Each structure stands twice: as structure tokens, then as C-alpha cells.
Image (cartoon, rainbow, N blue to C red; front, side, top):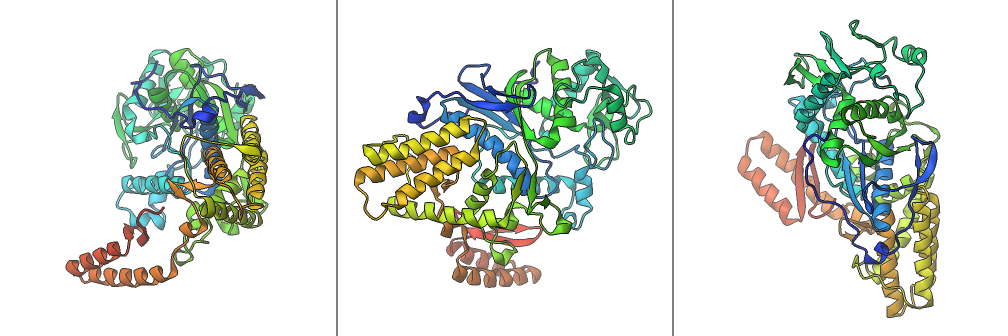
Length: 522
């Protein structure tokens, strides 16, 4: 039962050389608790869904570790010649502050964010959601994650969610109380198959202290719709004004774009229970079909051996690391950040350290040196000729072998570094044939790992740093422009904006004040 299946484009592999490889792609399946070969429902066409963030603030590097895993699934599937339909959502309503239980209590994260110091800059929760959604996409591009086929937002798919809840009621899998509509866990005997949370007494103990609706039939039952005519974000439904439960959002959006059955579902390990367990229950109760065949989960990230925390001073967003020092950032090459997130296997806890990050900055500088000499081309015509070309091609094969073996990124990076060392050893004396092989290798490696090029241009280290001379001019003009706006001298403010444009600078007015970037840069 798909809710308004939509025809959308698919990712296809532009690298004709890689298309012919047709390798086995194996990955760990949380559902079966084993590494399995991925066998798409439709041969040669992978459909997969990955849970995106709740946009109440900037996404942090722990979030992006999970997003990068999904990006690597996309890249590896394309590298073995598959077409891919990839959906990842934005949750902009309905995620509560206590979400570790099948039916959580607590405050809506969006509403709480609006009352924070940062939230004071926004007129309403809708503006807050739009702003942080935009920042998520900016960070996504900065870290060179490929765009998904579709990026649905929960608030734009309310019709599908309401229809799904009504269908679950009609099928006897849900019931209504004065406070909401709940999924009946006892109506789905397989509940717990993903997480292992199957014993009634354990589940009851888990949720006992957070149950707030005394009309619920079972403490384990989870909310599909919350009745609340005072909530900051609300919609009218057959059960009155309110908002959807967190879990129903992803089921409705996944089925709207990918159909009743999908090949693979990804997310962070914290989503196994309750979110993904609840998704399976409600989706399979709606359709009577298996929801997703493969479930892939990324382990948590630590920073300097400790849990990431603002109080410990080790909490990093993407912009904390890559923004210029003039904006409070560390001015680190974004692709070095991405490379660091690839340094640990997704299925193992990862310790993000400044030492590792600095090491990857050096690796990026070596790649940038190669690009500066031979150039970069993403032409589909990849040519590896001669002994040097064949040796270089072999390092790409080793990287691809690693990625198709449960996304073994540490081994893939070893192959990347080996190829880099091989090229640097003879960079000063290259034949035209060898240069062509290097460009082919750079393009193949970048399509697979995404650490060489960003947004259609060579990603040299200098591209990601602010020019100090330009920065001084721009900052002075921004100060003058701000004063003109305070004085309501709109004519002068417009003149300054034009002067900034002439300098090749784009100005963005944000709640934190005016920000700027070089036109055409990230």
C-alpha cells in the first residue's frame, strides 16, 4: 500500500568502466545479524532510505557520520553499476526530547529550540525549521555528500501520514484515545525482531516511567498521532487538531517515494529502537509485505575519547571545523573532515581526534598537489595504460573491493594513500599517458570516496580558506552596510551590496548577522 507513489529520477552510474565491474556488494544486516550480499528487489536497481535529522539546530559531526555512511552506500552501489533511488528525510515536526522509548514523553525539540537563546532570532517555529534545513543542506554540500534522489520533509507529507494512521485504524492495528491515536504492539507479533526487544516485561519496564496516557491499552503502544490544539505546529485530522508521531513520518515518506517494499534502510544505531522497530511494525501492518530487506546502522562517534558534549568543549558542528577563524571556526579543509569520518569503520565506535584530523589535512594537501600538476577531469572515459597505469588501476580495485566488503573505509583509504604515494614518487616526470591514468584514478577514487573534488571543481586546500586581503575589505564594507541599515539609509546599503558583488562576494543575512562567501564557493 503505497501512499501516492511518485515518479522520480534515479541516480545512475556515469562511469562506464565501473558499470562493467558488476561486483558483489556485501553489508552487515542488523535484521539478520550477519554480513549479506545485497540482492535488490529489482535487479541492478537499489532503493534505499536513510533517516535524516530533526532540524532544530545545526547537525553535528556525529549526525554526519551516519549521513556519510548512507553516502558511501550510494557511491558504492553506483560504482558496481547499479541504478539507485535514494531518499533521506528532514524531520521538521514531531520529534520529542525523550525519544529512547517506544512512546516517549518530553517536549517537542522544535518548540524547545524556539525558546532557546538561538531561537530568539526566529519569528516562529516554521522559520526556525526552514533556516536549519537550509544549513543542513549547506553542510551536506560542504562535506561532498551526493544529493539524494529526493529529500522529503515531514511537514510537506501530512496527507500521507494521516492516510497511513487512518488505514492502521481501519485494519485494527491502532486505536484512539482522548489524547491520541496509538499503534497496538500486540497486533504485530513480530515486534522486536530488529532490536531484540521482545519480552513484554522488559518493554514495560523500559517505558513505565514515561507513559502519560492512562487510556493506552499497553504501555508498549506508541503514538501515531498526538492530539494537541495548542502545539506550535499542528494540522487538522479526523481525530482533531494535532501532529504526527515521529515514527509514522518515515514510513509514510519512504513508501511515498520508494514503494511498499524497499531494499535497504539506514540510520544511526540509536534509531534501532524504538524508531526503526516501530517503522517496521506500522509499515508491515499497512502493507502485509516486508518493509526493508537490509538494515544498516552506524555506531556512535566520540571526540577525543569522550562522548561529544558542549559542556566538555568537544561538541563540533561542521561549521565549527570548516568556517574561517574570523567566523569562529577552525578553517579546516572540509574534505579532511570527511576523510576523518571515513577513517573508522561504520560498524565500530569511532574516536574523532584532532590528531587524526591534522593527519588527514596532510593527505589532502598531497592530493591537492597532484591535482595542481595533472588537473582533474570527471570524464566517463577512464584510461589506464602502461605498467604505471595498470598499477594505479590496481589500487582503485583494492579500494572498491574494500567498499563492497561491508564499506571497509579504513582499507579503502590505505589504497588511496598507496596510490597517492605512487604518483608523488614520479610527479615531476610524467608522460602524457601517465597523466591520463592519474586523472582517471582521481576521478574513480573521488566517485567512490568523495575526498578529492567538491561541487564540480578541484578541491585544493586554498579553495576552502578565506583570502585575508579580501576578508579585510569585505568585513569593513559589512560594518558600513550594517550602520546604513540601522540609519535606514537603504540607498547606501544597496550601493555597498553592489560593491560586494563586484568583489565576487555573496552576502547572506542570517539570525547571527551578515555572512559572506565567495560567489561560486561553498
